[in-house]
Length: 264
Image 1 (cartoon, rainbow, N blue to C red):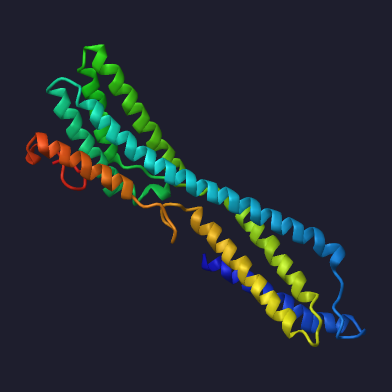
Image 2 (cartoon, rainbow, N blue to C red):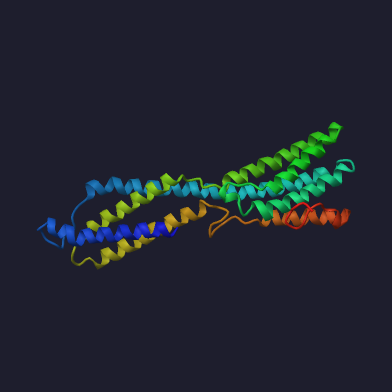
């Protein structure tokens, strides 16, 4: 994030330096008139604006998708717990206990590491428990709804993990940053060398807007860790809900995990 701001600011100073020293040596005309670069700058301006708009839309859509995926996973876990209530004992309690432990493990151990592309082996151990419990259900009326509900949970989890990764490739982001930097250099180089206070202020504001836009893109393209981020509130609500349901039916001590979802 700071590297982005540094690149944009450096571009501004390079342009001003070129305007002050290089241009003054290469031209002998009126110093109050700006050097016209319209033939070169117009397509560059268009490219910069289009790139910025495109990447901003992609990052915003990725953020919305991440938010939807987190909500979908919380709903799917809650639904799986409800469907498990129709299973016969002892599978019913086994499943519901495993679901409570699963959501604890997701929140405590997978949420902090998923931006690095990692998944929680603790959460995976509880999903393996789902499969073993399903295998013990010989009656299809119980088996099929549980498998469907678990598939919804698994799909929502995969989507959340996918959305945790940046949607804008690094080379696209830095290409855009370079284009914006070159655009700023061009603007600065074309400034009139005298009576240019208003021009410099305007260019400074434009540079600030470019820097803020790049920083915002980089932030929302990491939807679970940025300053503006998707939190685990929905998953927390689901965890509290199904834990209350479980402890209302069974002894809390019968849960096979601790508060972080780790097996006892």
